[in-house]
Image (cartoon, rainbow, N blue to C red; front, side, top):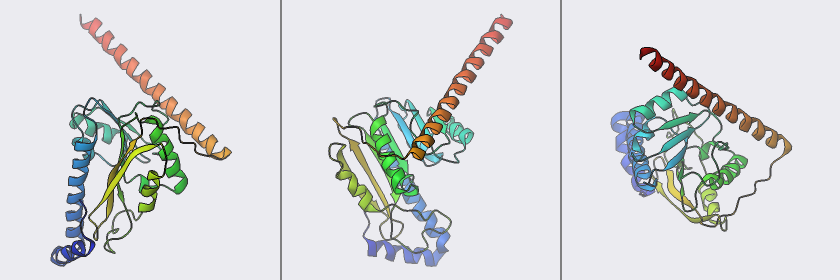
Length: 257
């Protein structure tokens, strides 16, 4: 999966000279799409899995196994209707939650088969990443993975033109290996090294993982409570809308008969 840094840069130079930055970005985008598709196809469990996807867009929904029970896409500024419509087109049951990717309070303990991070970690601060790790370990079933594809520092100087310049240090991912008893496997490789490097890998929850305690300030606790209550209100409204729609369907059926 890794590409030698000097070789990657050498290969990129003729591409940039021939078609400019746009051609180079299209080529790297295509390679990342191929890698994303391979990761989701091969690393997501196959037996009717439930998945939480952090960030990303609509195209990733087409890469999941068709046996998927449901994917919940979480991220701030997400277009709920667009994401859920794409899920219908991909024949993947999809629910979108436009909220912080560190807030997974809607999922029960040990109820999820995979947590997928597509650039979400790179966009978080240190405290948010710690909170994310604790939440991911809480919601994941034992033996199930965090699947990640994240920008890391390095590469060509114009790689961030027209896109986010946020990256994650490889040392953070290495730190997961030090979480004794939390992960039974943490493995990752570098894709597009020397050009647009990304860390691509998995971190598998240990069978006997203990809850990861995250110290929080009173302000953070209040914010978490408010976000949790907001999520609960949204879930309640969705259930009420579904019940009304079902009732309306019955009324129409009765009238026609």
